[in-house]
Image (cartoon, rainbow, N blue to C red; front, side, top):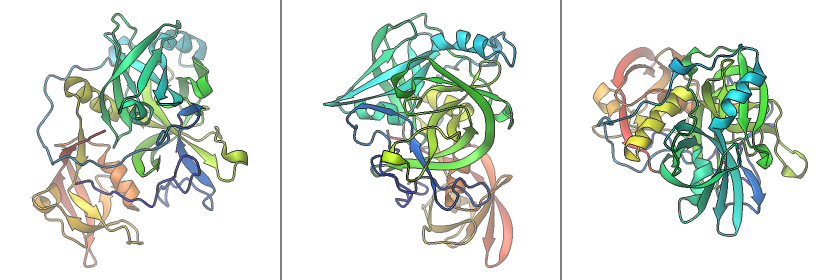
Length: 385
């Protein structure tokens, strides 16, 4: 059972509504004038659902672990460059970044991705890959101009992540960093194919961390516990890497904020871009590569969408699920998740998804006017793309 499948946050790609919901403490909008949307570039026409996301899972609860997971490259192979040498970082990392051409019937689009294993595995956003899941085609374009048809290895729409595979070996894999070590104010570099312009490099800083962002459309929705950056991100950057000052991937560029009422409904960078932290993406990617599926952590509740107070009120509890086992009850208001304050339902969902199934956490609740903290072990459900 999905934790919180609201429909009131959805923003259709053609005519966005209030797609961003963040906490009052760390909110995006000023008088509701800021929207969040996916950053896949539409080249010809509009692919249905291309800017959309899906939350939750229709799979049964499954707490079994993943086996034979091959670890993706991490910090050992740090790019040997200065923390301020953007040119050297770009030269080193560009061969690992690809653009992705999407063909779905008579419509097409483009996005970005990056190589995570030298034998042809590529990580990108689910909303980039999803249009090709039912008969479409994905073509990967490498930095040297070579092209290859890609197959979808697996997708996790709850996290807006997908792994593709091309029939190539000896590819230069990107080095993954540690998103938990990122600090506000550090250098941030985005690489991708905005508006179809392959190999575009932009730079800025990390503007904020743990930004609760929801974005989606066409009945689909994803929650992102985002890294915020002012490095320019535009349509087509979706799935491309966000790098630190040593050329390590710390996030996957996935959404941008735009001002409501923009002329012609066009979207573009206003210095508010959002990336999925690589620590989360790495776990999902490794599971998808190993099995084709991945696990989404759950606590086994449905939240009351009519609740307007601070926190997230439990409206229903999954029988036999983690919440019931921990002693949570219908009507409890969740106000904290480990050390993180929960001011609304969105913040709770992104907090949960920052962890992995099987991890032990503490939930702070208010019950009958009394506060208490309850230990809970996260369950899981298989995310179906």
